[in-house]
Image 1 (cartoon, rainbow, N blue to C red):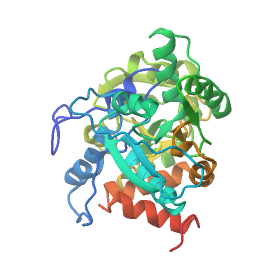
Image 2 (cartoon, one colour):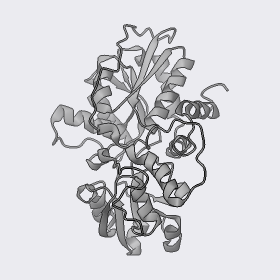
Image 3 (cartoon, rainbow, N blue to C red):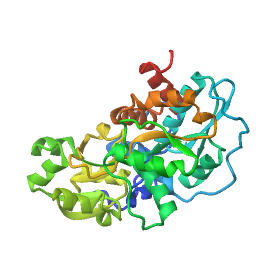
Image 4 (cartoon, helix red, strand yellow):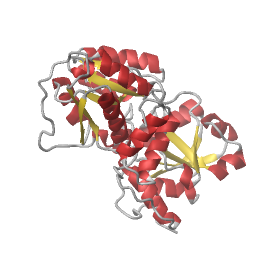
Length: 361
């Protein structure tokens, strides 16, 4: 039997950014920007490929440094979208890269010259957004609200994000406005903590929701992060909000190879990943619905520098059109195409926009 403490196919990478409350949204796993499809391979190798690419999902709060990646733009916003330059920024993980490419394609179609500038984490791109060196980023409502809340009111500030997207976005807009930023419309798509089981286990025990699992009375081994037992959105919430009987914790990382492998092989019954993890289905894993709203509303939305060209009505209309159609299932499938099928993020982004009628073929 494989020792689950030892990385399979590479070093164990945990999505440490999800270990705080509120937890940061995952990157769905590494860039994976090739075009060649993965060949069939043994389960362990497939887990390494599928889940291993997922292992950077919460790198948004990872330490970053280095040279200034941004160039300032002197263009003023005329609101016309004609020949103006916009820099789309964000974090360099799969989901964020796809979102940046979709924003870029929509803004180009609206008449802007667009540069895409991914960087390591929020600590790098947030000040550049405020300064105007970048113009728009894809963000997560609850996570950004608490990021600004702690920056404004200290690390022990009373939380402002909730499970209600309208309440959370209202709080975020108030905090963002003071920084010269405008928060556009949220999508239905949200990247939140997700707890999964095998399809066989769900079918055998009649499970669709976390409440179903609690009411089953089944003892559960949880494969999650080392910090999960101390987090309100993780084990504490599973125990106190749902009443799930967790008998043991396996600290194997957020959505990691080892995490998924433990559930597939039966060492754990419940695993921790994100709602937009597109690799779960391939491994015979299903997410149990968070039917009591334990998680905060981490819906995807564009955040723009209000004084720059992305602050125009033309740009807002283009970006809001994506938010109007993007679902969590859609985003999980886009992530899967990049992470599993090895398609390029730009190609995946454009094909989705064409499919939804937001771009011409």
